[in-house]
Length: 129
Image (cartoon, rainbow, N blue to C red; front, top):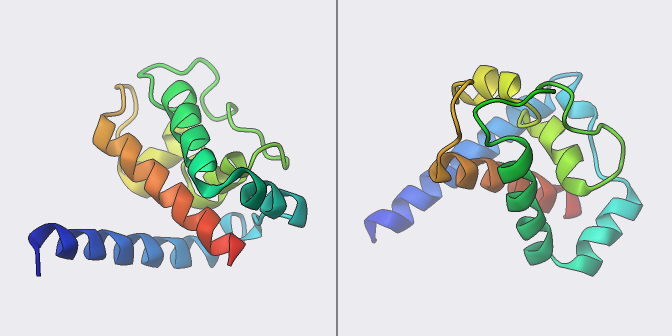
């Protein structure tokens, strides 16, 4: 088996374990996509949602300094990515540091953005199932 296939499998298992753990908490476990949001994802396509996710994370979470950190992610059913961010602890730099061990006060790397998007998209995919 190819090294990268094994690494990809390990990363996916770790993300699934993380999501199961977060879902057990009262706050993170309270977030779910409603039927309208699920329909939105299916209508727009998972590829479009992932593109939106990259855009939102790059603009709202990746900068080193975020003036409204902790308040930049809406909690209402505005876009599936916002709901997923709260469910996965990727909603602000404080949660990223506490839950995902990604330090604050510096710009996110491409690898960190890719990881965050993977976590969010895994949660959204699980919600659609």
